[in-house]
Structure formats: structure tokens, C-alpha cells
Length: 175
Image (cartoon, rainbow, N blue to C red; front, side, top):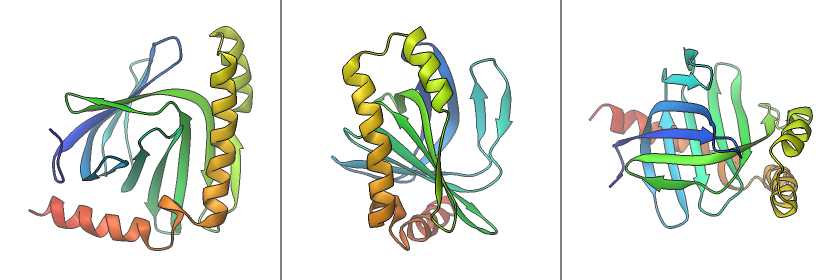
């Protein structure tokens, strides 16, 4: 069972169950009935086509139970950038956290301005993979929810949230 300081693998899939992307090692910082918070730095990422690359900065990842989005807060020299994946609520089994990636992403800049990415990909995949109407509604609602949380400074967007969990990551990493 995952507990703070242990590592898990994070995998994303597409609606048709095809593999999308995996992050090899994410350290669990906190796990509860409502959320899993993890962190990684210089971790290997494997893409669907087999290509591998490494992340370039520390990141704090937040997965809310039952939530149709997750956040990756990347800590860079010029501030915190957020990449919010719109996807199904996650499942967690055998130290693997997985979810279905529904294409849309919300990229948030250090000044808290944002852009919604991959609308075209979402449109193409929704037809190609026959996203059901309830999934389409959930995805659109999740994109709006991310923007709402951003404006309200909730969750990962709350001032000090990322810094606090990054400090915890550094402490656990050095144990």
C-alpha cells in the first residue's frame, strides 16, 4: 500500500484503452480518501510511441478522488507553471495510478493567466473514439472547474500549496 515516501507509477490511457503516457516514479507525499499528492523530479516519461524523455524540473502532482482533472505544478526558475490534464477520475491498484486522458489541457502560467490546449485533438478524438455524451459533458465541466479553482485559488492553486509540498518532498527524499 502506498504511503508517504513510497513511489508509484502514473499511467494515462486514451478512451479506447490504448496506452498514452507513463511517469516511472512519483513519490507519494500524501494519500487520503479525497486526494493523492505526489512529487517527482528528473523522472523518465514513456510515450505511446515508445519515445522516452526525462522531466526537467521538480513537479507536484495532485489527483483528487472523483475529479475529472489532475494538476502538475512544475517548479521552474521563473515561477510555477501548471499543466492540468482533463481526464477521468483516477484508479489506484498495485502502486499504479491510472486515468483516461481526454485530450484537453489547461496550461497556467506563473502570473495565473491560462490557455486551454488541444481543443482540436479533443474534437477529433471525441468523434474517432465515440466519446459518450456524459463524458463530453464531464470533460467540458472539468475544464470550467479548473478555471474556477484557478480564479478562487483553490487546491494546487492556493498560494504556498506547491512550495509546502515541495519542501515535504525534499525532506522525504533525504530520509
